Amino acid sequence: MERTQEQATDDGARANNWKKLALVAAWAPLKRSRILHMALMGTSDPSGEAEASKEKPFLLQALQITLVVSLYWVTSISMVFLNKYLLDSPSLQLDTPIFITFYQCLVTTLLCKGLSTLASCCPGAVDFPTLRLDLRVARSILPLSVVFIGMITFNNLCLKYVGVAFYNVGRSLTTVFNVLLSYMLLKQTTSLYALLTCGFIIGGFWLGVDQEGAEGTLSWMGTFFGMLASLCVSLNAIYTKKVLPAVDGSIWRLTFYNNINACVLFVPLLLLLGEFRALSDFPQLGSAHFWGMMTLGGLFGFAIGYVTGLQIKFTSPLTHSVSGTAKACAQTVLAVLYYEETKSFLWWTSNMMVLGGSSAYTWVRGWEMKKTQEEPSPKEDEKNSIGV
Image (cartoon, rainbow, N blue to C red; front, side):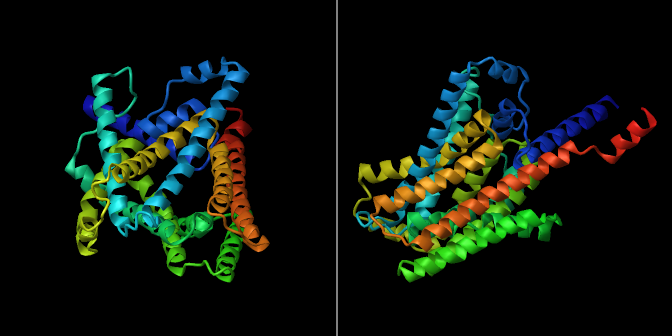
């Protein structure tokens, strides 16, 4: 009987933890100090951290936020430009996008295991969950891993065939697919205001495609891969919610298993597509510079997950989304300047429509969530009416 009660208590705790994670995904205004801990460890954070953060001077908080946001921007933008170099550099001339993606997953797996070992050896120095390979858990996560492989592969293939300047527009339909899949799979409806923001995103996407075609730089294959990447990002979010209980709600455990599964599943793809043969003929295979760039790409891929959680911790989920939109705008401008491209007014308009529509959707969903939380439930109204 006591064992049953303890199990019920544990199940209730996990259900409560899942509700908190769902609120984070829906941009709920949770305590900032608790968000990163839930994202990294899958558990709620002690309330003392929130009180400690309030005691920090304003200038110190502003400096921390500036540093964290800058770190997020530098990591994210650097990762995109570095991946573009590895995937489509005239100096490398290496046509092995699947191997590059495989190697980045391998680096992430080794980093997760290394940090887990370090946390076990030095408990107070590193805050990282214990990672042990369980084949049953790996099998249960396999459907998500297939979607994860599609997401990272199509992202890299899109970046290979389109320019960095068009990259954000090419993958801009993620929000639209989120709305469609939420209705088709989860039967969740979307408000009219949110649908209008999706209309702006779709309009900006098609205008961007039209302008890329008018300038003679459009890659239909890259655009197609961008649409598939957007679809996989949406599916990844849905399946992640389903399999999180299998890893005790820990995002890092999920990252570990996803990348292990990806490394295994990539091997037959590499053999089927002949990329091992292409790699053996690569003249810079023994170059330290090449492997250094490959490893750095894997480090950036791992780091982006950490700095994303860090930015949410020091700001908020909504501010993180706004920062991501502003980062995308800065990335586009930097790409145009770096590659010395000339773009038309309508091309810039398409980017502003996509970025503006994405920001508006985030704001609308945040406003709707806040409004829903502020409205009392029918049970509370009934209790108040009878004076209980």
